[in-house]
Length: 209
Image (tube, rainbow, N blue to C red; front, side, top):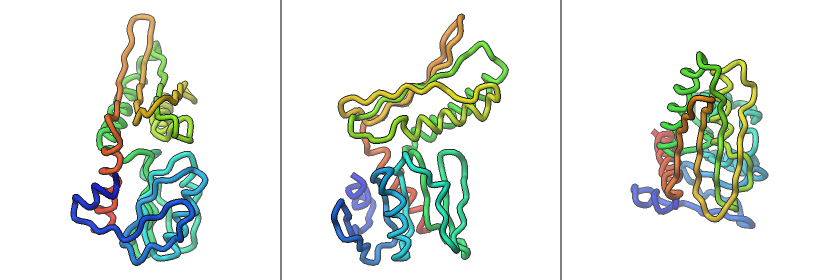
């Protein structure tokens, strides 16, 4: 899907690398990495060794622990991280979710959590549903939502997260604030994976400007 969108937007695919393939980026301008928690860091380092910057959407590992001589890591917030060279060239953009809609959802969640700081009668919880192939649990998006709530509410160190793996669900995230009087729910439902792929391609384009 990333390849399809990249081609639609006038880009050329220099290489496709899957399990067991030789890691040769063939002079690509940027690599887009969506693999597994166990392989993401190694793939990034292999791309860097060939001088190629990376857009990474793999979750379930700790990109904030990346350490490479000559590169500076900068955490934008809990959902996004950037690595730059000493000359200011961006070598890595990592995000827990590239969907434009999800990033708007993050902002809604942050604003609602801030409003709830003065309403201790509400208890927050998160439910996330994904396809059975997703390896990390809870999702990186759910963790980001939880961290934003905890940041706003010092009295809550951890938000309850329910993770469900079923069928081919692209991704659903639901944040609930419950009290004895009422319940407030905000939900993001991905209709497919195209939104995630489009966001990654847009990030790659931004990196190369």
